[in-house]
Amino acid sequence: RTVYVNGEYLPEAAAKVSVFDRGFLFADAVYEVTAVVNSKLVDFAGHYARLVRSCGELGLALTMDENGLREIHQRLIVENALQEGGIYLQLTRGNAGDRDFHFPPASTPPTLVLFTQARAVVDHPAASKGIRVVTCPDIRWQRRDIKTVQLLAPCLAKAFAEAQGADDAFLVENGYITEGSSCNCYIVQDDNTVVTRPLSNSILHGITRKALVKLAEEHCVTIEERLFTPEEARNAREVFISSATTFVWPVVAVDGQTIGDGKPGPITQLLRRIYLQML
Ligand code: PMP
Image 1 (cartoon, rainbow, N blue to C red):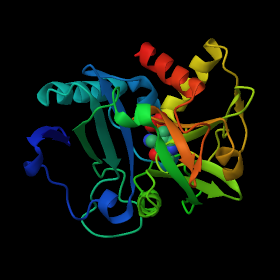
Image 2: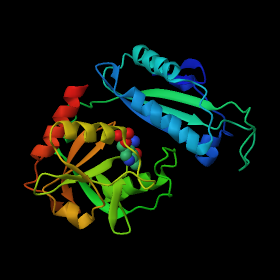
Image 3: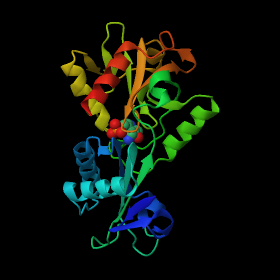
Image 4: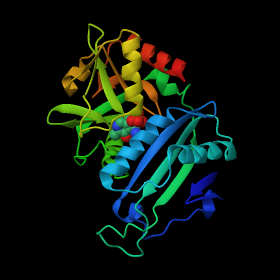
């Protein structure tokens, strides 16, 4: 792979970041993942807008504008002949030459890294088979609306899920599901209403979620934004997730309980279909 590091396009083995980089030492960094389908970026404007917001919340200087960043993404698509998959972008507060909790001087150059990941998105087997999830406590910090690289808690949640023979974990706080370890969560009730947690500092404001809420409205699918419990999820007619790497995936079991008849439900399939049509 050819990767991007601070203005250079390099073979991945030649790309280097300092051991004193604050992304490495303090997870003092933000990231984005933009999907690529047919060698085209999906909703790059949405990902850029969220990156700007994440940087603003952390006082991280974003020195490149939307077009500058889009060009890097597009060059990586070309250099790596990427047809389908995603592009990972990480911006850190840079390297101050030592380990020091205090922010470095504002003149410290940030570290910007991007790389491509080739994988099936449109025809991923999980989209037709569905995934099995288990619930576990949400032990993350209180600013989950900022997309930082502090991802140890979701790594632990995925390891917990794997140890239970499940594909992923739904995180639970104060008795309610916040989101998945790397996705937003939805349940479908008997009247076909889709329930999803309202936006707040407790969850990441998913770019795919935003698109789905709009598309659902246009297709007369009612979205109700409220908290829901693991029990409601286990008893729901359908359960599904969304993210830039999955778009929409059905969930066919929660905590070992089969959802509906164990097959992807009609509302889930409809939303995935209309999302794909929009690309
Ligand atoms: N929540 C979390 C915790 C995530 O990591 C992700 C994936 N980035 C999402 C939700 C979904 O967000 P998006 O649709 O922007 O990928």
